[in-house]
Length: 382
Image (tube, rainbow, N blue to C red; front, side, top):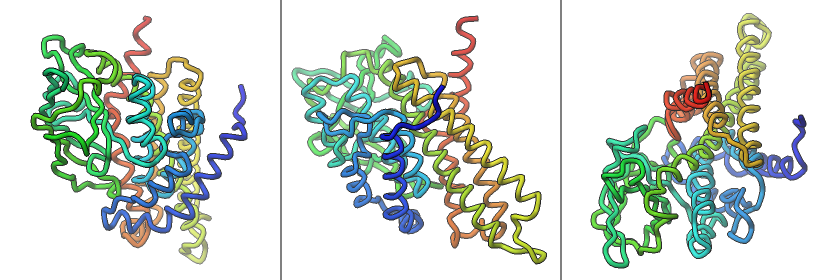
């Protein structure tokens, strides 16, 4: 068992850390305050290969492994969780299904622009009535001649208001249940009948757009079916398994930023003529934060290692996402407590970390669903 990172993994970790410290951290609070999409930062992340970390170079990516991807998401998310999730969605929810299930023509036409950072992707799954239960999906796709006609509305789609492309889930055979769901590639700029609906006002990750995708007799070419009809649900499950590693890494990044800012503040804030870091109550909070984050990060890296080595990782990615997100949420609450009144004010980034952390317990599958996935895996052979 070797816990040492490879030279390539160390390199991308250091590169992402330096980029995040130089380009992202100084503007993160302002991006959050203005709810501003970080277009320039996204373009620079693309130039660095961060929008297609695991995608081979022949399709515009960096050709690295999933551990590299997880390490990079952690570093970007330490500076700005919004930038972290934009990166994660492009890598995990758009690039992965295109690369795994797409044809050579689809990869060249629709994967390359996003993996190379010249465009953004998103994943259209959630609906008002279909969150944890995709069988309730109402969006339909009907083949008419050489086109699919799509009708329906997707909700809470990360990158939805800024993306150029989308992997979309829709029902092609209502009578077949889960086996009647198919996946499609949508080129937003060239899809008549599509428009962006409501852009959500959110608690956190405010520099990341979350939007409705509205399809009203929208027409796409027949060849934009991803895989075969009825394979969408299977594709969805594998895509979300990998996506949970990205969100777990995002949560670790938020937690790491929280810990560092808690340490810095506790060493400079004085009460009773000494820094508050001298008090056991504060020391224990910091010790617990550090321990829980270390454990959660090891689970994230193990899940990424399993994916790299083509071993089953559904249970491990769910465990990593569950532990990392719960740890991030708990750590940020403790961080606010350590800073006291300052932690509750926007003068310090701690309140932003707490707002950003909450969503990691919800998207890519709620933590209640994570527990169901874990239980299913540990009980299936008993």
